[in-house]
Image (cartoon, rainbow, N blue to C red; front, side, top):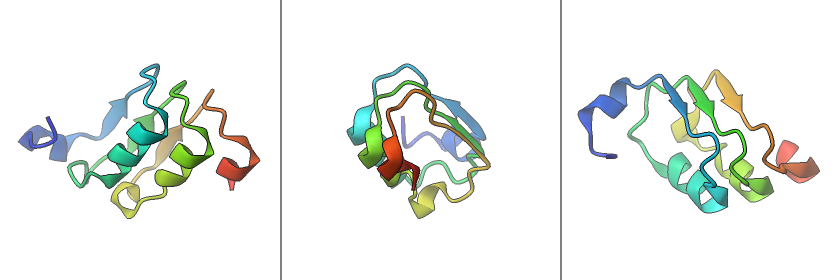
Length: 79
């Protein structure tokens, strides 16, 4: 899936309610396959502070909207 040429055109991705956890957030942040992504919805994925921190990746620097609702981010992840 990550090698699909269509991913480079993707502007909005909703992965809400998928139990990605920190590991999934790290994998998402590591990919260079989403250069035009503007909106990322990760509502209720149990990311925690570690997963949230991973999303600070330069690969996701073009994001304009990020939904992290119900992810138990806590004070550490909110920084």
